[in-house]
Length: 167
Image 1 (cartoon, helix red, strand yellow):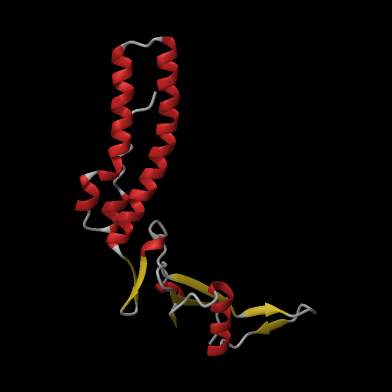
Image 2 (cartoon, rainbow, N blue to C red):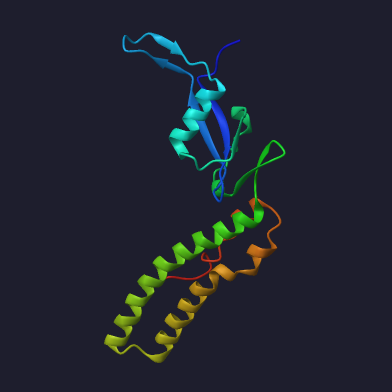
């Protein structure tokens, strides 16, 4: 049986997302000769401490195939009953935060348009359009589809900013 080059470890941390630490098992010594590391409990704990200090609760060795390939909601991963899965309420909070960040950049650009419109004496209809876009961008995080999403795939497909036009 071949020794894997890396050993994935699921690490639970207090008030933080699940972390996956990949422990390298095959290295080269100073002469370039291959060197295999024996991943003892003490060695694994030393690697986790190197990454997180004392800010971890527990860990378990997992198979590489157990690590989710979709990293969209990585910060919502939880280790439940030996299965790494996405915590949907946490994913919804992350999705809202991402929407807020994207909306903030668009609001900043929109505010520059408002200043330009004021300086150039744009018609009231233009000012109303800019105001409505700003309100829509602010409200995007509260899109009811986010709360209604029943799966991670459904949540990832929701983009309330896509329907808000830019100039």
